[in-house]
Image (tube, rainbow, N blue to C red):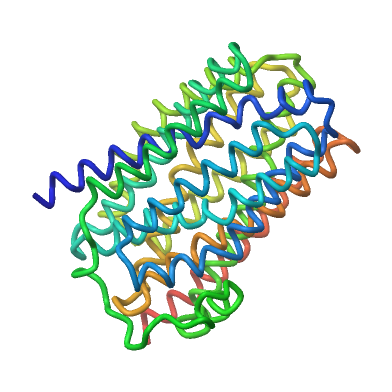
Length: 397
């Protein structure tokens, strides 16, 4: 029964990430068709991720008090409502409002997925299940770009309409098909209070589990997140603005990435998790990622530029599950839900600044967001070197 429930969960995760990415390839078209400021491609995502950053720790804390599948139901419906507002927007203010509303709930979805895996997996399978989660996320997201790009050929509204319907369906299916993970997680010693509902309070509660080593991991996650999102958001707008290519090209590139990520995460990533100490091997992966991002500054024609993007996306898909597993490996049953919420919050923090800076500096130079991405990865690698040095001392102690 547990295996059947897990398979149903994987199916829901795939459907969620597929639909969650329908809007991304058509967002540049929405901005152009409705005469919005070009900075909106970054500002809109930054608005959403700001709310995700604030509310992810709250959702992580709430996962300790109610079944995770109920949180998925609430958050999928809330996310769909925010996207409906975004898709109907005719002004910058409504775009930002819709994205902010969606952001309150997106962090809840991402946090709930991670917590469900951690809560329902035994220790021996937790790492591989988290890798499966990230693999499905990466592959389904890439496929979602492809489907969204094809729907964009019909209209922007078609992509948003399909997204809203499928997100609601994901919430309903979660409530029906997923197992109640309450018996598998630590029961909080005190009842949920009004103070706990405050997202700022939930965020500050991270000091209960934070250590210097964890802090470095979270800083690496946040800083590299700036680089990933700066390059990602710029790429989507860049190929339309600089190369004059439609959403179908973005979608096709993502489909290629999906196949490559599936192959890499089912082979190399599994090997790294099982056969190496990921607290050390994450750094070479980040170094390769940095070199890939540097390629954006070297290649100026479409095909080499696309190949660079595919390589960078694939290597980043290897980095993400390693970082998440490093966080999970330092958690306990008492703090795992809150820690996964904080992990998602750090991802959102990187998304905020990456998307915002990319949108604001693009007008001063189309390559500036890629320069920012390269610089942040270099900084993350330097912090990674410090982390490994301290980790080796920790192992000897």
